[in-house]
Figure 1: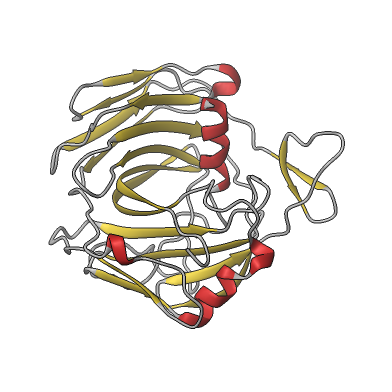
Figure 2: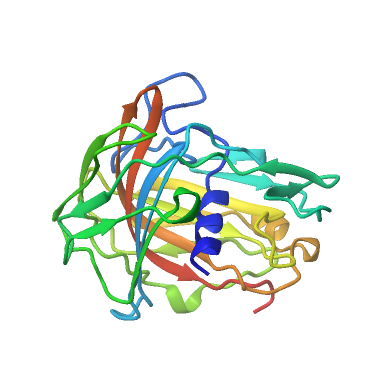
Length: 290
């Protein structure tokens, strides 16, 4: 299950490098910046604290992956405001593909994971030290909250095959959706998420809606948004119609979607961008017609 979670985290890394922007401008960021910051860096340290949106049900995952490349399995179809639509063609590969199987049984291998020594995180409810396991996978799971609002979180490692680093961010405030119980995918109807906005200039919102077909790690339809933390985000009715199309679904909500309030920091390690991403997340179980 832990290795599967790492694969899910990997496929969530999409088309654009952390430091890129359509017009070559400096990377977006900050509470009021409308420009979206899509995708993950090739190397990441991620802390995701999930809640049930009612002040409980906490689960925390900390993962780290040190690669120098990031495969792209999705085609970007359209952008609108802070959001974009992505599509992929899941497939089945023989022999079994150690990577992403897409299109006409095409196997896109996972990138090589490098070791960076012991990854330590401080500024949490308790300090965490993570050693790599098979294939240089770094993972730590806890059924408890780890974030302390406003605390300074530091992630560091002494380096190995991947260079040494030290990154620091402030922990985001807990995210609570104010219309959680009203969320539903309905034909010809837009979908709006609301929450109490943060006044933190470094906090942003990341929405990730993914369809579920055949329990695959490649999803045929994705809506991804990266937006200012201003209290509201709306997906248009025509995008919801596209996302809800029956051809994109087959297994209900076995793969959850998420909305996250996050803070992040990045640095260059020997020519590779490394990002520290810390988020308070609310899982979304959205299935067409339910």
